[in-house]
Length: 458
Ligand SMILES: Cc1cc2nc3c(=O)[nH]c(=O)nc-3n(C[C@H](O)[C@H](O)[C@H](O)COP(=O)(O)OP(=O)(O)OC[C@H]3O[C@@H](n4cnc5c(N)ncnc54)[C@H](O)[C@@H]3O)c2cc1C
Image 1 (tube, rainbow, N blue to C red):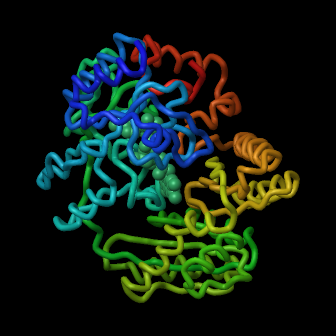
Image 2 (cartoon, protein in one colour):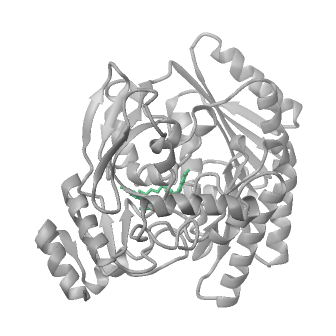
Image 3 (cartoon, rainbow, N blue to C red):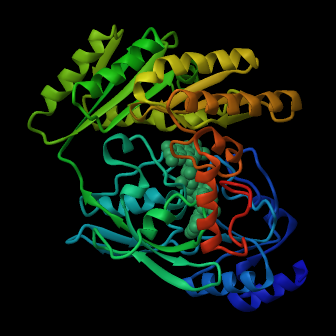
């Protein structure tokens, strides 16, 4: 079937206003926040599960690839249609279908923007905990498929810890329910399998999430250090003390400079590291807890530590962290975000080796990361028009992932494997491990319809 025929048939299924195929539109849906690019044959905007089911059944019958897409912010090539085919863009399926406060559940369509849903829940005094720094634009479907994390996942867990069920369109177009509102469901845990499957096993058309009442009190602190090592040791010492803060985020000197340049927050440009520490819970005991955290910072040679006095000051501290990636984007035309995880106790040594890798390849690296989870995000700065520099970036990125694996960590904390890290799977998984995963892919998607060239080569 040629492109024209594909577009004609899809137009009959979803209406021609819901099929895009101009050259410009194809380019617009051919990229994500990674370094990969590939145009689809067309883009379909479904409005219902039935639309998705019929489009997928059509693609299955004709051997056409289908790639689901939320906001396209993933950092590993996850929504790039590497073999063309259909991009299913979920911006029209963005409703909250049910808010069940009594049972602390919410049911949403996959295209809803994460923060939009959270803002609605805030009106009920409720919160959905996962908070990817990109939540202003990301969709719950993308968060589900990437098993996204965020600053508050140290205490509350990643997306998968809050997903209870989903409606899924299988490769032949069949629609099934996995999990549900209950905490335990009979049979295999297919919800657990699908979360983090990066659109390779099925298309998510509804998601059931756990929500909780908003906490009583929160205290946010900023600690400034003259060495990265002191910052890293503070992270380990806080956890070793039995405290689990809601967040423990770190920025290094290059990030501090970029954030200050972009937002003028009054951050010290000569500091080696800043820790953003947030504790939350009951009002009773909160001051004592914050004081204990600050004591641990002082024991680790903190240069200055202070707590936000009110919500406005807290928002200011967070603006810097949440805007850090954007601020770093002003330093060079491109950056590659590495996403490796190491045991917290290895943070200091791994960070200094990351900087050595930067020197070895003559590349500037900025670090802004979820320190409490040991989840590093070295951002390697470059200009993609310089092919030699681009080549060095790829090599440095791989070396950083290998470094994390060699230090007892892994190759992804939250950004998925996508295309970018397929070759790094062997750093942490044996051939037998990967073969077992491929069998799962084969069982769900025997014809390889969904999202090819992701996680492992098909
Ligand atoms: C500035 C910036 C900051 C970021 N911060 C964080 C962070 O703190 N934590 C974090 O974890 N990530 C972060 N990310 C990465 C990214 O935002 C997340 O991976 C996010 O979950 C992607 O959501 P999306 O809607 O953009 O999905 P997309 O990028 O469109 O898609 C991601 C994957 O989900 C699949 N998918 C999308 N919808 C569906 C569906 N309905 N059914 C099946 N599969 C589907 C796609 O095929 C693809 O494989 C950041 C990215 C940027 C650019």
